[in-house]
Amino acid sequence: MQKLVTKKKMVRLLHSPTLNTVMMVEDTICGAQEVIKISDLKRKLPKKINHYTLKVILAYLQKSGKIEFTPDGVIWVFMPKEDLNLIMKRGRTWT
Image 1 (cartoon, rainbow, N blue to C red):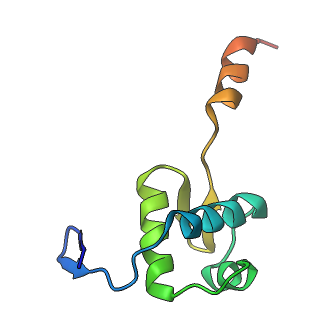
Image 2 (image 1 turned 180 degrees about the vertical axis):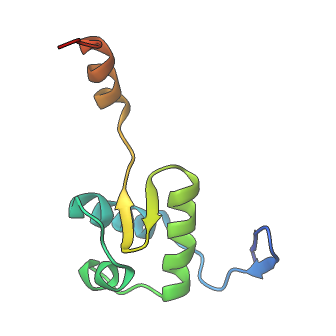
């Protein structure tokens, strides 16, 4: 059985997420384009997901810089490299 090491304690992973599940959660949060509550996220997912598994996925997405938690829920903050390149090519304009 795998273990997830956190700062506070070691926790056994009972429900280890698959890549498909992680991608499903990513797509749903990214598609929302606004702050989304965890309860609303669970309802919008195409398949049901265990709450503990969702918590593990959200912790991973936050650690990888793709989402941020707000008092109202979670929001997608990741910007693809292509978008960053476009911003860099435009440069800074002074108006």
